[in-house]
Image (cartoon, rainbow, N blue to C red):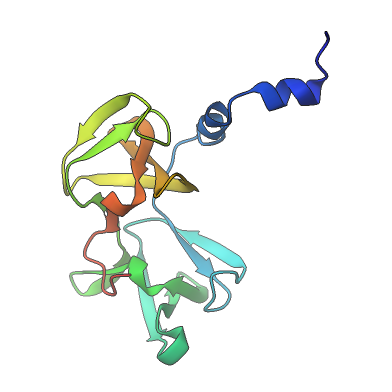
Length: 161
């Protein structure tokens, strides 16, 4: 029996496709959006550690968003990505909350690549839903794998989310 290209693609394990889709280097940027909503268009991407000028943080229903300036571009970021750095405010880097395993794929059934110490800075990529948890692609010391999202946080965040 001859498989059509579509059936051949369907036979490829989803985990392999997920790994291949995230093969590029990852980072922990913040999306600068045109409005204070998660579905507002992204107008720029701000790398972790970059200085921003906070113009205003919303109250009420917009309390989770801050209007910032990054260079000449103004927009909104989720408040939880901001952290103090001296007299400045930066996009907070992502760190592990405790000792965390870096897995080869998005789940505990995959081999462990490395045990990452608590407080280690990592670059966080996209996340996928797993059974009872979300798994995020992480780059730690040049090794790329997956880690449970609840073991990651922004370091020194002004507004924990």
